[in-house]
Amino acid sequence: MSEASITRAFPLPAIEELSDEDITRLYSADVGPLPWVRVNFVSSIDGAATHQGLSAGLSGAADHRVFDLLRRLCDVVVVGAGTVRAEGYGAMRVDKAGERARVAAGLAPHPVFALVSASLDLDPSSPIFADAPVRPIIVTTELSRSSTRAALEAVADVVICGRVRVQAEALVRALAERGLGRIHCEGGPHLFGDLIAGSALDELCLTVSPRLEAGEASRIAAGESPIVPVGMRLAHVLVSGDSLLLRYVRA
Image (tube, rainbow, N blue to C red; front, side, top):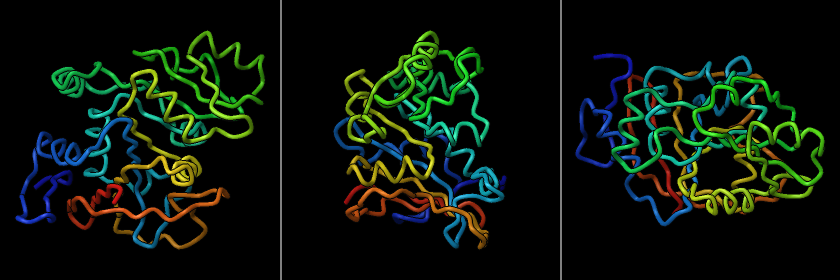
């Protein structure tokens, strides 16, 4: 059994050795009307969102496998610019198998990359833009620097979604108006917190890594916006070794 092997433990009956097609079917179930906002995170068992400052330090082979498969199911991947810089993101591409699966499902070969940045601390010459198979989107605010917006408009579509902060509801609405209703967010914690505060979240996919981190690592959701607790329903539990891959949908 490989390190990336995944079993379904819930709902019963258990299913051993899930194929990629099995996994994508599980994550496609119970998806409601579009727009649908899915967030994907990894956490240690004591609640840390990072190991030595990076979420990649908590991730294993099975988490990487699901991470890649979830990109097959969306129209757009949304990531905060701080996470893009910290985690070393490149251009948003899926592999050849992912391209085939997306096209077979009626989607574009690659998802759109939407970067969320109030400060616009982004390099227009970055491979994120230069190597992008689809023109990216930058979501920013009215108060962002107009000169920087103009430079970035040469390599991406710049969308205003709020005056001081990017507003989650406006972000979701702007993407849906572009036909990007299957919205997949990969972080970071402040963007996740804003989606919760804006009642814009439909689904959380959470890998629980079998580690104790302690220290001062952040949680997967952060922010100062007032939040009304959101009830979620457990849709499935997948197991790979000592890791759990959980999927929750809005109750």
